[in-house]
Length: 239
Image 1: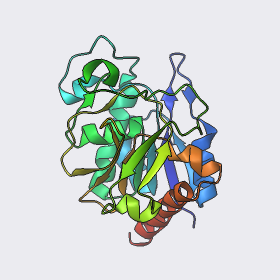
Image 2: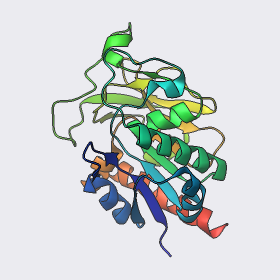
Image 3: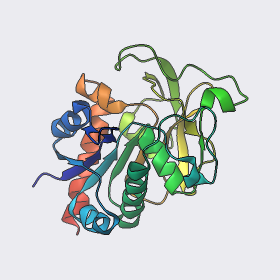
């Protein structure tokens, strides 16, 4: 049976949900069944995580800095407290279960926070180092700047490319790295672009949006999601 892949969505002020179809289409393309995860109570988190086979936490709003012991910076943007709380619990449980996880943009940030790391609440305001434009003014499949991937990483074994260009839609970024995470890709200005867990089977975070490239035929990005689905099937089989 195809694996069920849970995908979180943005929560709007009118209490509606927003999820780009790119995420679900990418999961379908790779051979999984996407399932949108609405806001659910804490008591149901464990049961949900037992029933889904993989998790994608998508891009979206800023994360409340209280999760990493900081007060709000002047340039912190909109936060969604109930979504923060639920996604934090989802990632915690997935790490405990060692089930396959991909976090894109906000999803990387949440993974880093759960593992004890912190963020720059605004990379362009808080970093002393020169910082590239990381919120591109171009279509989502435009590759705006390069990254360099660690050849010794698990992600490199999937992509099989050491240097390539990516898209970029963020103003926050990794500051302190979470325990057990390894930086495996960086931008020329030092911004963390991809991480992987050193202690789990398939736990990856991407600052860029590989799902956008997968849908337009980029083979390395498609391979990433195929491997994700394969890992979900293997984990499900071994339960």
